[in-house]
Length: 71
Image (tube, rainbow, N blue to C red):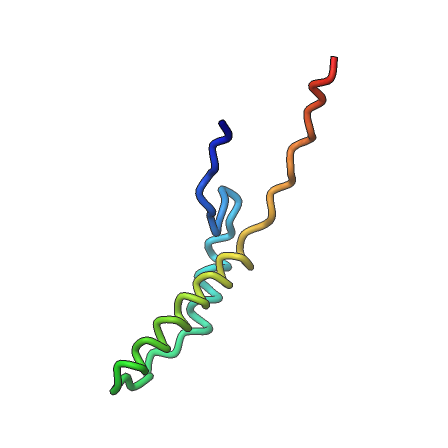
C-alpha cells in the first residue's frame, strides 16, 4: 500500500528571508474591516499571499532518479 504524504508548500531549502520580504512588501495594514464580507475577503487574500510567497521562496525539489527494479 502506497503511503501518501501530505501536500506541503515548502521544503528544507525554502528561502525564509525572501518569504518574509514578500509578505512585508505585500501586506496592507491600514485596511478598514467594517463588514463580515470585508474580513472574509481579506482573509482569503492573505491566505493566497502566504501560498504565493511560499511557492516563490521555495525551490522545486529535483525528483530522484527512477530506480530500475528489473533484474
